[in-house]
Length: 340
Ligand SMILES: [Zn+2]
Image (cartoon, rainbow, N blue to C red):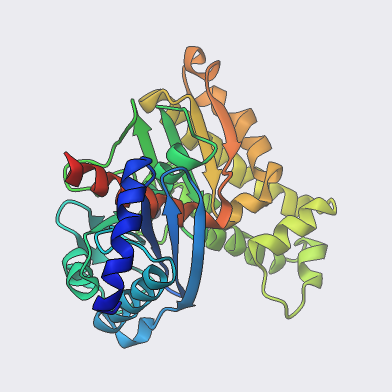
């Protein structure tokens, strides 16, 4: 990041501006890994880097590490000094004020002004966004949702997040806290959720919830034989999926129940937002049709028939890079806003 490189960067900045192709820095802040890449407005992703997140050291150390990673990637990619940074982060945050209120996987993050601290540390304009909302933008701009103005994105991971795009606009509410799609209630007498409420979608289809059902079944006298055989191996959603693929009836029933809950939630989203596309991503989405088949079968009975004819349910096309593409989308928007 030496001053001596500025002279080399300017011609490239001009070249980028003249062909209308912009490159931005994308950062995906996770509890375990901090990932960064350069993403161009045409979707080309390069200069990918990942380091461990120094989570235990607290927000200041994490933000310093992010600034170092940004400087490193920007130098190698010879990015112009004004190229903006987009950061996708977990947990409730306000993209307007740039404050992260809380994040479950990063200790001591309470009302951290991430945007301003990182802008000062990296000397670049910064935009931040909630991971679910960013992922929806990433899919709409670069992924399977390209060309769709109305989509619902569901991130099925350990937790369940999501994002909604209506008429090309992200719907995130008054303070950017909206579209916590994993916490819509699908059963008033359902299981307890990680958020403290009862019967949320996440309490059925989150990775932890599927694993909990597996442990419960395996602990009963007539529990699933295959799950019992897992022995010392921890029962995860993946173990349950493998058992279901081998025909284990209890494992199949667990995923059928999760898929039906997913279908009920999709029905509600279809009624409210009338999307043309529902995109399913996140680690649990790797279970594929084991979840999506029952969800597809269930959702029409939870919404008006007229809207079901025009909605497709598909898997994310960006996979693990959804977050980076989402971060790039908010950085590109920042760039566009600055140019106006
Ligand atoms: Zn919940």
